[in-house]
Amino acid sequence: MRLATWNVNSLAARLPHVLDWLAQQQQHAAPIDVLALQELKMVQEKFPFAALHAAGLHAACFGQKAYNGVALLARQPLREVHRPTPCAGDESARLIAATVDAPGGPLRIVSAYFVNGQAPGSEKYAYKMRWLEALHEWLRAELAQHPRLILMGDLNIAPEDADSHDPARLADTICHSPQEKAHFARLLALGMTDAFRLFAQAAGSFTWWDYRQAAFRRNLGLRIDHILASAPLVPCISACTIDRTPRSWPRPSDHAPMLVELAGTG
DNA sequence: ATGACGGTGTGGCACCGA
Image (cartoon, rainbow, N blue to C red; front, side):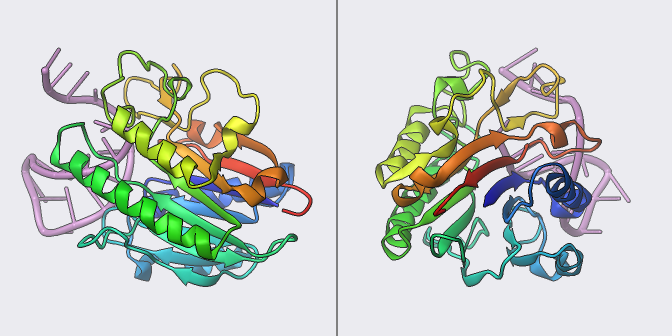
């Protein structure tokens, strides 16, 4: 079973890339069973259900005008779809959860778009801290109900030095600050595992590159998209990779998709 | 220090991302 996550930076702009990438995976590797999308930047009324259905995909969307927006695409039906907004007074579309059937039993999947936070000390950063706190409590409860859980998406945190192209210079900037890293660690302390770090990975493995300054060509990136798996699933994880190829296509998203493979009972 | 690129909105630019 193969799962993937991708911040598409507008699904209206990127639907051809999503369909092309899924077709390419199916042809040259194996089908993607579940794809989590972030930054749809569209309301549900504009979500391309028909095009996705024609590609053989079920879909569930939590849309919003202009910003945010998350979705789950799946070969099999999505059950128990929830659109949580755990941060009080904040209705932004950043989380969608659903259950899919898998060989070892039902799998709870969460597509997540964490708050960016702009810069430490800013009002948006304070909002990021509040939102992360609320997410932590929501995930604790979700795990209690769904022990076999994968949370994947754009978490906007580079948890370790190896996840940044310049960790020393950027140490106190957004995605790098100690408080953000502490929040990431608290998610792992709930019993989640960073699937990417289960395996040896090349230095300079990133999921996001700024559009400016030829950052992709120079590999000036960050690993801020993540796939976190609950403990019962960890023995099933057979691979976790980043596919940089769509980042090199014309008019790309600034993020690349990340994939995980579950083997055997997974 | 700033802005650079690319997306959205009801625009003539501003705001946002990370």
